[in-house]
Structure formats: C-alpha cells, structure tokens
View 1 (cartoon, helix red, strand yellow):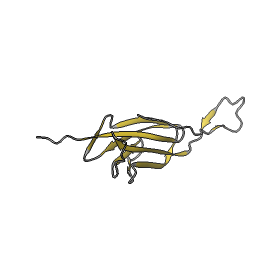
View 2: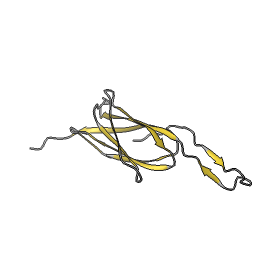
View 3: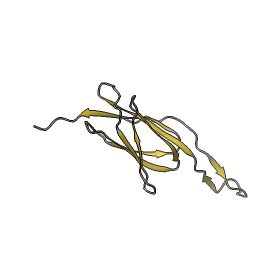
View 4: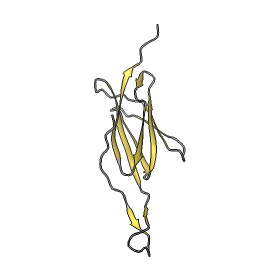
Length: 118
C-alpha cells in the first residue's frame, strides 16, 4: 500500500518567454518517507530500505526502532524505486515505483515472517 501526501512543485517561466510558452520545471529537493511494519502493525526495526534512481547510486536507509525510514534531499521530477528487505520477513510487493514531484510520505511496507524450511 502506498499513500502519498501533498506538497509543492515549483514551476517558472524562463526570463523573456512570451505568454509562458516555455515553462521549465525547477528541480527541488524533497523528502521520501515511510514505515515498515508486520501484519499486526508492529514496527520492523533495522529493515533495509533502498531508494534507486536510474542516473545515480542507490541510497540506503535502515528503519529506526519505530519502523520509520527516510531519504532527504531527493530530487523532484524523476521516478524512483523504493525496495525493502529484512532477514526474517518477506514483502509482497517488495518494492514500489514512485514519481517524485513533491514530498512523499506514508509509504508502507507490510512484512510477513519467512517460514522456516523443513
């Protein structure tokens, strides 16, 4: 489940443009935040969360004691993949693709305990 909150997008008309015909998107930096929990709503601490963009190195975060993760300084105007992994839990889906045009929060990943192999 992914829930997105509202934010702002900066648009500007380049100097000298007539009638705003050549607007360009001004890239700004926002936060991407969320939480990792189990099926009972309990926090999953120390879960690895990775934010990936095609044109940059992946960024790693670990959830805190309350299951929250965050990435600050994320550039707007691009798509990112947010993926999650934990040694004792599996996630379905294990990733979401987001289009970052504004601040993103409340991305929830819900983990199910991995069944031991016999």
